[in-house]
Image (cartoon, rainbow, N blue to C red):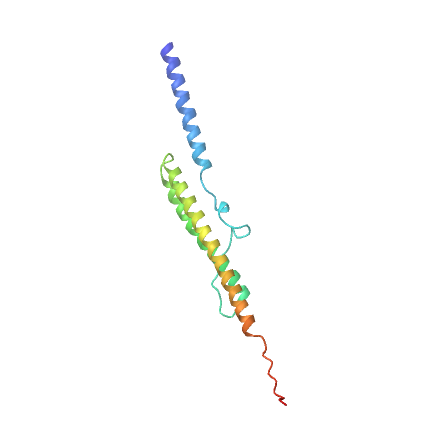
Length: 138
């Protein structure tokens, strides 16, 4: 009888432990919404047309960027899902780190473009000031 109790307790411990590992690994599975800005989660890729206004072109380029990132994310996530359940958590972790790094680079690029545009506007405004020349000399 004692042997049966030990076997039952061991079986329950292994079962509970496997459930805990499965739940813990499932919690670490990343979601696209964790990395994508609000409103761009389902961005659609469309070819930018030459005749579109500049504002529409730049907006569609942003949508295209996030649509491509989402497809790459889904492909990488599917690869992680195919790995055995105990080992895929490190794949998920690497995927999350990569997405956070790419987001950081994207934000730095956006800030740099804003700074460059502001510098250009400042320089352009200085250069476009009218020069007063007195043509009526005494």
